[in-house]
Image (cartoon, rainbow, N blue to C red; front, top):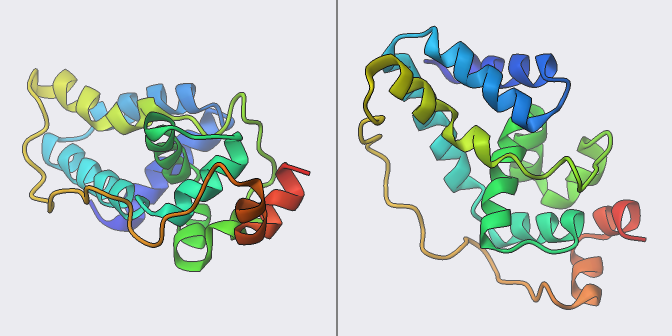
Length: 173
């Protein structure tokens, strides 16, 4: 599976689910289960690579601002959600600055958005439906033990407002 195909699956399922992360996960499992196991493994590799790329302090800080707090588990779910928003949002936040999410997101409802843990398991579920076994080892490097970048004091609103002025102004003021 080429990267463009990966993002096409992500985008088409998000659009069909009208942005509902749980529905998107279900649709993604259905569509992946229609493919061959090697393609599902490729999808899983693409997803995991992006999931690891987003393991950064600045992305966690953006999640903290948007969700008014984000534990380790919540940050994992947020990274799945960020991938689920599609290439433009994901790459815009990671290649630019996570504060750019203020411009990249049309809206954000912390009750619905920012949590898409089930999307992280879509390839696993589809693979199991196809073969009754787990996705094979993806051959990726071990994930980092700590987020990349400079740690932030998430408990200090002043620090967050200074580091993420656009997000703070739009979603926290």
